[in-house]
Image (cartoon, rainbow, N blue to C red; front, side):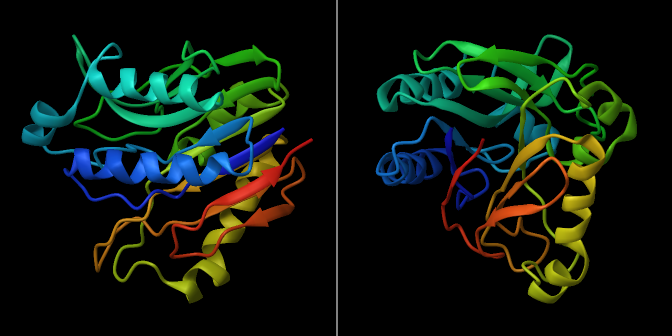
Length: 239
């Protein structure tokens, strides 16, 4: 399959501006004729965790953000994976959704390795598709051993939206080259599943998500990468 990973430049709390940027990037991705497009964690809102932000930006699965994503999956004829601040009756989850080419919801993952005030998801799910067996993890789930036990051998390709930054200056090319990239490769190797990782890019001087995207094979080998600290689209063919 041809996958496009978009490290979306995300302005926290500026949802409509982020939607406009996302539409522009989806049109850019369409030139590659992708089967699958993957977007970062908390794609349209930014990674928010204050109660006031939950009140303003968290939405149910049938809310306007999910509907617009479904419409775009149908319009562009792609499988579309994106992060969402999900409001449920019991609280707020850090979630990710996968829509098929018709805009139908195939997968709904709630981040398992997450901190309060978020609620934690409990299970890893998978979907049989024309592209193979697909699954989703979110950011820290990739490094969580109980999650790895659920994933191992159960899917052909894993999608991992992230919104990850460094404590202190971020991006940080030296830290990325020296330690961070290898941690991702090692995490994928433990899972033994081809994995597509895409991180948001937040224009924040410190601790902002540092962008970039990776495609990693089941042995933890780097297949392709977009530059650290950038929102450059990564188009990659995955067996």
